Image (tube, rainbow, N blue to C red; front, side, top):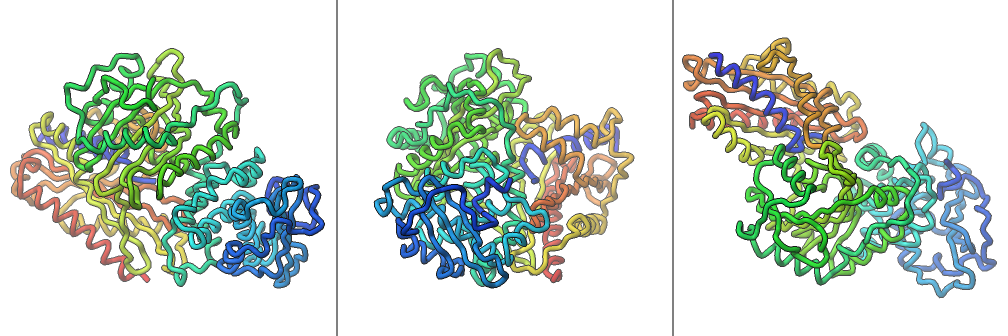
Length: 638
């Protein structure tokens, strides 16, 4: 290529990887309720053993039937001042007798609604299943399996079973059970996991789409350990506890203000954008900082609203964004916060308040689902200036899945914003998506679950900006092939890295057959001669604050190969243009057995090729045929 094209090529490498990350393409026994002896926890038990009558309750009997556990060998015992626990009274292989203890308030007895016990008793019966499958509690704890993994698996199993016992309107019994949350509040998340981890494990089970012939209940515990546990503890790690400040708890009323939420949602849903005359310039130091930082990473403008759109966000600064490509209208409100609500939350200071908040939010209408929010739901613009800490989310509109979503949460602010007294923000966000939020669809190919995702739309905005900067001489496109081993696909391979490398080589072979030449890693330099990986790590350090740490790690670990075709196409004649291809393979997720990550193929049409319609058609066909070739290869992998 000519010098100008070479500089364009160096620039294209940096932008390709930057887009890869900003678009989000990747990746103590005493505290347990599971007891290994026949000794209770010091509670006084009723003489009549089962004062609430759990052993005769139809829902509990149905749970035991679905789990396949021997209900006749289970003794239920109510204890005043006790807690939920499961004991193996005669730990002999294939001949067990169990006692499930539960707390009873003094003198309450049968006056307590049995439904209040369904959630935690389902958890305890899930422990019985685990013991039955492993042979003993000792076997269950073998291979250094942690108590937390056992407890979260019981939550996951409970979700699957309650999904068959209770309908959608009633499923929140488990995650919103004040009794369950309070009695398991042991200040030791190594036993049961944090509240966020527990509710997430339950929800993953409740919403698991499964065929009972493909995943029998007896295999669910193994499936959880192989696939779900690592994901939950990596996405929602334990927080470092600090001294709580009991003087400041979050005001948990926003999502449960039913009428105000509905009116605000109608406003968002009814207009595709906010008229420009209703926007104002940012005023406060926080607003100015947010606009400045967001502009660095995300195209488009923020429209700050002149007036509060609803009483529930009075005192917040609100702005709207519009993503026409995804038909998504979004409103985000934020205000300064101290660190106290965050510290209190992770010290269980607002545990019961949080559970009540979700329960009240779900009571806003039939089918309204509420839960803890995951970091992946954090609004993109806020990711530029802050790091998600915790939050709550509820559905909006009718139907399943919900057509819209509303969040309320807290995040720590990027210190680089340098705003005196602002260490954190409280935020509220709301979006309306036409046709609902679409989940990624996977197709079963042999023993694999495969999804081929075109990412052309992700490049639409940046291509517009590049068109202005480079006069149409740099154009991006790409596709991602997501790969998972199916549940019924046979043994999970252990050599993930080797398998991913085989797929990587297959894509490379197809590029080489097309006439692409690989650029030696020694020559992968930026325009100033810096090693490309070191340059990208530096770029990641200057990326969005909320995802910076993950981006740096991914850059250092991913397999990155670059190719160039510069002689075989009309637009390449005379060195006036070229097409680059980048094959990206993030490091395999070792914590999720069936997840094999993805193979990403990005293309950059440079120089005259960026302007050529035939080159654009060639790139589309290249992406399609390369993805098709890999999928065809998977069909023969049994």
